[in-house]
Length: 443
Image 1: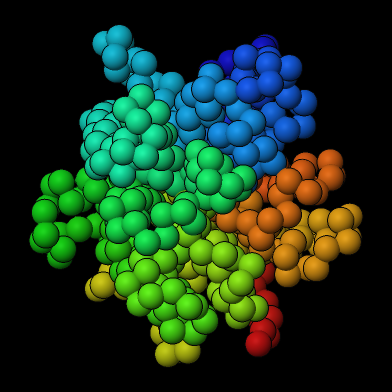
Image 2: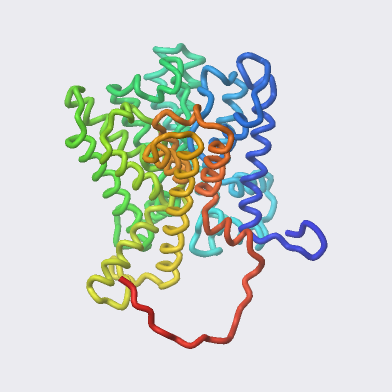
């Protein structure tokens, strides 16, 4: 794709610019007087933050979604969530499928990068599967939530609430309309509602596992041995990442709630750490150890090719497997009887360093600018770069500089750190020379 002269945009640049363009369109729509309940319009800073949070499926908000935004504004936010969840490129090229236009090699390559597919072959079929799967699960989720919301809000409002929260949950966005029970209250009013908890947990999990895994499930059913290595790593890592915080929240955190409600809230919160952003418990009442665990889990996030953000479960798994290989003095990193390439290990290490530096630097900047405790600010920046949306209640209080930091972290977390770096670079220049090798002692 050319933009001027002989300059050709790379796939990474197209992906980054696509997200940026959608954020600006969302910002302008939210600034319209029609988008706010007061009918007077909303400032650029608030709209930019909200649009970024929606497109990057984060869920951090500076304005309560139901009390500030009108039905039109809520619809704009939901549209941005849907586009951001599927991916801007995937959503844009889906129009070509509907119109019957032929998908060229350039578009196929772009789709491969956008959905983290292993190869270009079969990419059109996989993209159709992603679109149909997304819409199907969201429809089923909305129908399942209607019995909980229609009796409370009536038919029209109940259906809208069911649709909104189904899409928000599947896309791991964390936006909610539960400000009717108290501003910024999230899903706390439904802490003991088994139906709402189970449906939302399933939607978050399904959306966060990744479409490549569900494609394996479609093709191979329960024959796990036939799954590709990535699917096996995603499933095993995801299970561990749900179980560990569940046990911590269930037994290590004090709660006066009945046992049944504690099971629901612990499970709900352990799943929502996977970049979903809803909460059914008071996060400020959790211990320091619980906050530290949450920060780590938010940084890891969901899985590649999913609606979730963060470093990704595969990144954490590859780093752990690499460390185990070093401890065992093995030259190769292996898993499930397969060898993991050195490029994957290098990329995982680079992503870890990049996310940690950005998350920590952002926390320090916000702490200094706002005069707030560092751990509180680190929780906020981990939530932003992991596109989670959980907060200890400081999002609406921070100033302009801190908002810009959070906007940048949300954008990086959704688009991907390596994608942004590759987008900022020109085409990689190959070299045929090899420098002399010299050993360096580490550890």
